[in-house]
Image (tube, rainbow, N blue to C red; front, top):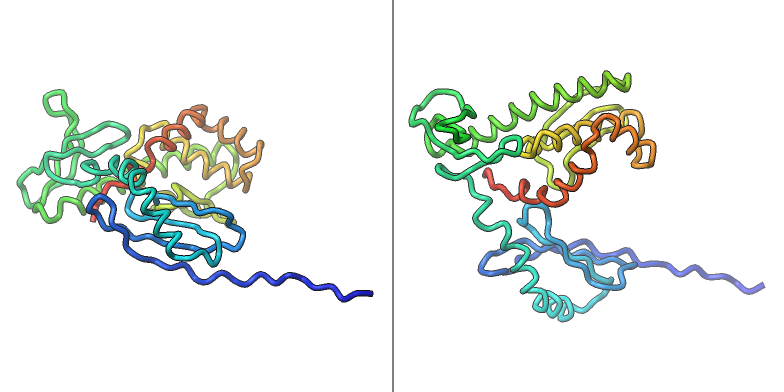
Length: 250
C-alpha cells in the first residue's frame, strides 16, 4: 500500500485594519484573508462607517490596492447615500415609528423629551443644553423601544405559550435582534425609528425562535402567523435598515 497524505491548509493570518480615503472621508477597512476565497469581495458595513474586504490567502498587496482604486467610484456612489442624513442637530429630523419629526430644543435646562404635533407637524421637543441633545434623544428612543418591544413580546409569547427569559436593548450593527438558547431576547433599539409593522415583525421574529431555533419553513410560517406583515417588513429593513444604522448619535 502506498502512504496517503492529506493536504494541510495553512491557517489564515489575522485580519488587518487600515484607513482608506473615499471622497475626502477616512474609513476603517478590515482585510481578511480566506484560504477558500477565489476572488476579492468588498462590503460596506451597516451605517456606512466602515468597510470589510475578503481576499484569497496570500494575495499580493498591490492587487488589493489596484482593486480598491478600481472601485473608488462604486464606493463614492454607495457612501453618498449616508451623507447629510446621519447627523443629529436642532432643526434636523429624526424618525420615530416611521414618521419624520423635526428636532426642536425647548431652551429649558430641565424637562422631558416629548414627541408631539405642532401646527400639524410632528416635532420632537428636547430639553437641556445643546451638548446633551444627542444623549437625550437616544434616551427617548430607548424608552420608546422598550415600551413597544416589551408589549409585543408579551403578546407574541402568550400566543405561542412560551416565555422569554429576558428582553434587553443594545446598539448592535450586525443584526437587529437575537434569541439565545436559554430564551434571552435582545433587540437593537434603533428599530423604534422604523414603521410599527417593522417593529412588530422584529419582535415576532425573535419570539418565533423561542419555539423554532432555526430559519426553516416552520419558523417562517410561525413568524407570519404572529406578524402577517412579515414579508413587507423584511423588504423595508433590506431597503432602509442601513440608513437607521448610519445615524450618528455620538
